[in-house]
Length: 256
Image 1 (cartoon, rainbow, N blue to C red):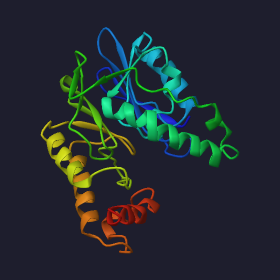
Image 2 (spheres, helix red, strand yellow):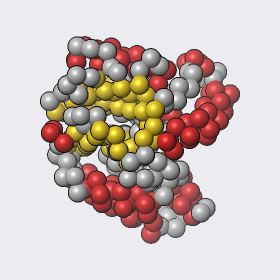
Image 3 (spheres, rainbow, N blue to C red):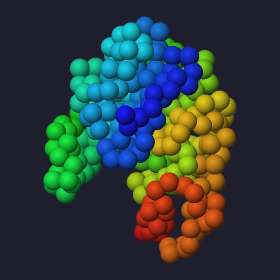
């Protein structure tokens, strides 16, 4: 039902969505030992409710920590289902959720409320706690190397399982949206993520992959930087999902 829950490491489950509205944006559940963490909440309240129930089922406890990777609605609009838990993000991500995130949600309700009435039930629920560089969660570390996909992007690293929850810093088999970020900084972040030598990478969109997908993400960005607006789709991009994003990316890059 809109996402597949897969155990990708001991005590780590990836919720891989089918990427059709309202199931947009992957999420994850991590058993930290004494606590349960949920990473991102998708675009959908329905899926967020299912994520809460799945977290209880697979770990045997209610989640006590929700981590938001960045401000985009397809990763945070399910937050209200977790309103009673500790919601953590970088300080800048909280600011962006409170400002541009709130503005975008209001605009989307006005534009799409009739077609997708479920969006009218969404109450923006921002983080309750922030961090600057890294937050030690025992088994896992929630960290940021700054902004790349957006002005501030966090990831979760579970070293004992060699699992990286990368959110939209890495997407697999899809075009990545670059219009809210800094592509050069993004590539530097990817270089640092590659040094983690992750065995498993959970992207913000697309199937779970491996550390090799970090280099593929970087190659995508490198090609984008060389293209002019109106350039044809490179053959190596032909099979990527959401091809409509390609032209938007070129326009966004050249508008700067």
